[in-house]
Image (cartoon, rainbow, N blue to C red; front, side, top):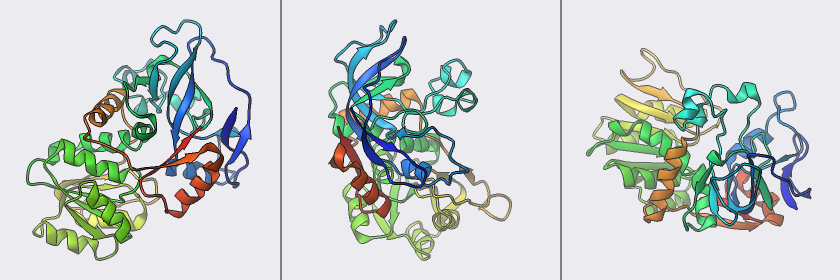
Amino acid sequence: MKAVQYVEVGSAPEVREIPVPEPKPGQIRLRVLAAGLCHSDWFIMGLPAEAYSYPLPLTLGHEAVGVVDKLGEGVTEFAVGDDVAVYGPWGCGACAECARGRENYCPNAAKLGIHPPGLGSPGGMAEYLIVDNARHLVPLQGLDPVAAVALTDAGLTPYHAIKNVIDKLPGGSTAVVIGTGGLGHVGIQILRALTSATVIALDVTEEKLEHARSVGAHHTVLSNSEAPAAIRELTGGIGADVVFDFVGATPTLETARASVRVDGAIEVVGIGGGTVPTGFGSTPFGVSVRAPYWGSRDELMEVLGLARTGQLSVSVERFDIADAPTAYARLHEGTIVGRAVVVP
C-alpha cells in the first residue's frame, strides 16, 4: 500500500510502498478515506536528531477517517463496512482519566510507550490504518469523510479549549482568536455555536481575515504590535474575556497577555514554542493561563454532532496521496487556507 512517511530526521516526507498491516486480537483495520495534515506533523519533523524519539520511518497522519475493513479477534463493537472517525489521543484505558473518556490527559501513556497515530504510532496517511482498540473509534453516521476528517483534531482541540472557559463567555463577553488557519477558523465557528460572545479574529493577511469574517468573526484585526490597542478599543478599554492563541509564538502570546481583561483567561492552543509570563504584576489580576491538549472522546462526539446539524464545517483543500509532500510544503509555507486533506 502507499503511505506518506517521515523517513529521515531533517528530510521532507515521502510517499512509499509498504506492506498492508494485519490486525491483531482487539485491533481494527480501516480502509482510510481521508487523512488531515497538521502543524503538529511539522513540529515533530522539525525536531533535531537528539530530541526526536519516535521510530523511523513513521507513517504520518493523526487525523483519519475510514471504513472498517477487517476485525481482529474479539472485536464486537463494530462491523466491517462501518464508517468511523479515529479518536487520536490514545491512553492506557485503565486510569481514572481514561475512564472519563479523557485519554488526552492519560498520565500513563508516555511511560507505557503509547502514542497517537501519526505522532509515534503508524498514522492514517496511508491506504490502511490499524486502530489499537474499538474505544478509539467514533461512528461518522453519514458525514462526508473529506469534510469531517479535520474535526478529529482541528475541531476537537478548539472545542475542548472553549468548553474549558465557557463560563467566562456569557452574553456581552468578548473572545479573541489569534490565528485563523486550520484550528482557528473552526474555533470561530464553535464560539458562535456555543456562546453569545463577540468574536475578534487576528491574523497576518487580509485574505485570512476575510476568511475569518466568512466563518463568523464579528471583527478582524491584523496581528501585529498594534493589535492589543485595537482589541482594547473594541472592548471599551476593558480587554477580552478570553484569548485563544492558536499560534503559540512569543509575539502572539504577548498580544494575548496585553489584550486579556482582569479575571480573564488565556488558552494557549498553538505549539509555536513561545511562553507567556504569568503571576503577580505580569498578567492582570485573576487571569488563568492554560495549555490544553486535544480533547475527550465524548467531546469528539459533540463536535461531529455540530457538523451534522450544519453548525460547523472545515474549509478543506484536497490532495491525492501522491501530492502529500507538496501539501506539507504548502502547509509549512502558510499558503493553505483552512485544512489540507489527503485522500488515498
